[in-house]
Amino acid sequence: MSVSKQVSLNQEQVEILTGLKADQKFINPKYFYNHRGSKLFEKITQLDEYYPTRTERLILESCANDIAQYIDKQSLIIEPGAGSCKKIEYLLEAIHPSVYVPQDVSAEFLKQSAERLSKDYPWLTVSPVVSDFSEPINIPSEFERHTKYVFYPGSTIGNFEPEDAVTFLRQMRQLVGETGGIVLGVDLHKDNETLHAAYNDKKGITAEFNLNTLAHINDILGASFKLDEFEHLALYNSQQQRIEMYLKSLKAARYEVLGETLSFEKGELIHTEHSYKYTIDGIAELASKSGFKLAHSWLDGDELFSVNYLQA
Ligand code: AVJ
Figure 1 (cartoon, helix red, strand yellow):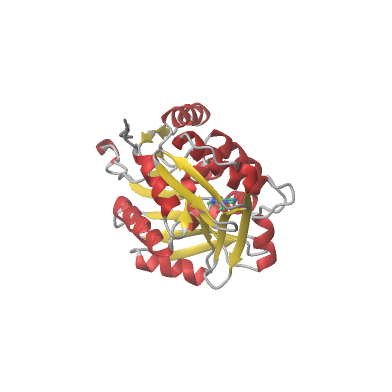
Figure 2 (cartoon, helix red, strand yellow; figure 1 turned 90 degrees about the vertical axis):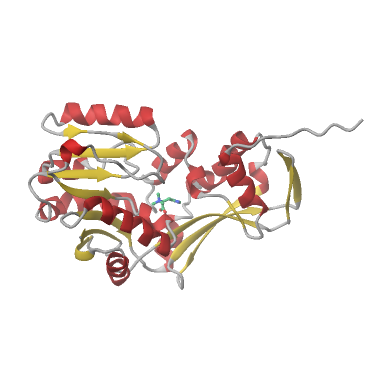
């Protein structure tokens, strides 16, 4: 007797399996961020080689008053993927918005962060929105009269392919209307050495972060990919102005996963991330393609990172 079992797959499982069956295998970078992955990213932001986080903080702190010049008095600030709501704090005193709307998928974390902010800034109305990244953010109608702004720090925009970045920014343009704008943190194109070091740190935290994706998808798929049979690979493609991250299979291997056979050749790469870097001209182009104009860019002295104001 032969028994065949119907396995019904959830959306995440289908998404991951599709990527692992493609000619160029890939895993969406969102799968970096399980609990351990978020902790590892936190560690990355504190590495000597990883300049973006501390440089952006420096710019936000020293330019907060200049940025505030672009923001109306009765303002509402929306932050997509706000998470810990830490970065907005660099701007709150200077901008003094009426309402802050942090959005995130993780309800519990967001609630905690929002409560902390409400307590520390009693004059601020904090109105968290729990939603998936792909759903539009709804602003409660009671805030209609406020000028709307988006805060999108961290060069998270760099994870989008440039055309998808434009699609995202167009949605933000819809959200803020004719009078608002977006404060956008963008990592800058630079020499290969600095970028290579930032994604190949000596302590190997970025490697752990990349490899942790396999542990995460093992949990989701009930699979048993062996982390020590893969290697972290990150390189700067200066032509395309992007960091490319991969997991390299060190052996030929076959895995049976949820009724599918997945095979890896020795040396085969799984693509895990693009992190695009922009020039100021490139940021101006992103802005104009999405219905904004680049009003101002603030840079650190070494021109490593930028905080930009895009005006509708
Ligand atoms: C969170 C997308 C901004 O691209 O630098 C850090 C993620 N990947 N090290 C980045 C990341 C490897 C990070 N972003």
